[in-house]
Image (cartoon, rainbow, N blue to C red):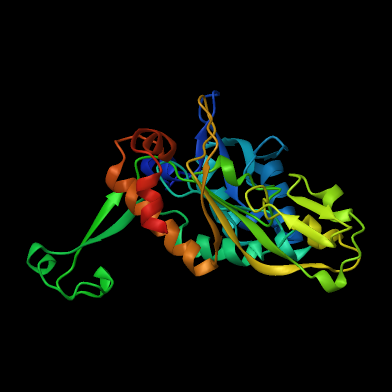
Length: 323
């Protein structure tokens, strides 16, 4: 009996919107699978192994952004593979001019250096933004602009105009639990790092110099005779090593928040993002993402990355929108 050939129900446009990646070999695809913030359970791992063995060549590839690729999938089997993935709660990752999967370190779940719950925050970002290819822009009709009572959110105004503008290029977001930036906050369009502001408790300090010796930026100076400590704010990177390593508990937490970086990218012309804000809370950070996206889709040229837009327009314009 002749083997039945599955006819793919995935349209060519969908192949581009999602990570069905054409290989150099004819009729073969590499599929990139979205792992939820890098986490997989045993059932999902088993299913990935089965798909690789049954539809590919028995290999998988781990990507730089916490995804999994299975190469050598014939184009006639793409829909079957998609259905198999859905059985264990997995799917193909977003691709093209869209907001990509959020990358996150484990944060407070088990990392001793972390200051924030990265997983919870990254899940909020994914729920709000993942996969979007158009950004909603709210504008105020001309007749309303002349009114004096426009101090409220434009979205609350009756008669508001809502437009959708397509993203000019891919857009990546990452979340790191501390300033070690294991999720590469500075290499994404938007990146966040957990940070902590230290506060010195003189009553508990025995001037052992542990904090002075461990500070990576030499921001702390000990004066044992005066029984004083100088913390140079301009040098402090809010890593919290002084808090974590003080044997007396003299360095304590004053404030925990998020540092925000924008304008990073990889590729032929890589660029580090610039820090635009310190000590945002999660709500402020989500709102800041929205403002950056609105600025990006309104101001960028077709095919322009956020980094190139900032190089052209400067960072101060967008800083004023956020702060």
